[in-house]
Image 1 (cartoon, rainbow, N blue to C red):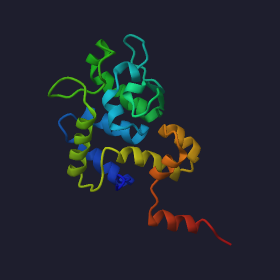
Image 2 (image 1 turned 45 degrees about the vertical axis):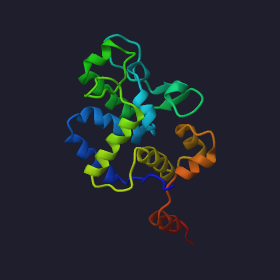
Image 3 (image 1 turned 30 degrees about the vertical axis):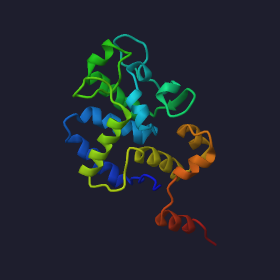
Image 4 (image 1 turned 180 degrees about the vertical axis):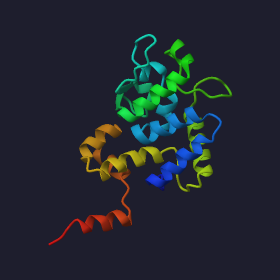
Length: 196
């Protein structure tokens, strides 16, 4: 089975530009960023509740730096934690501030479908990604492309595979290594590091 495409920075910018022109741009932007900046799977994005990302304070929107997912929200068989970058926390905070109705029901899904006003399911998140990639003219990408890009980008920045394994929430380092994309350009850049 062919792995999902890893997006380069230009492709990610193009994807986010397309998102700006969609009907539900704020919601769609958060969905894309949860995938690319936190490595969340489609099923995990779909299951996120307001209380998963937001501290318990009343009117002040304070986004957590770690999201704790219960096993029913993940692909795995155990609870998991997702570390959230400052950039992503800021984006989530802006989204919640813009959609104040989310503060009224913290048990509700963070992301809602416009048609049903209910939460998404994994298939609807996957369909949204297919639509966005098609509009951005990015081939061979899927809802898993954000997760693979997240893992590959960490590797390219010199983060150890052991740390990436924890951030990816993989039980095996072998699985993590399969996610890391290796291209001809990366191989050429690597050999240029060796000199006499």
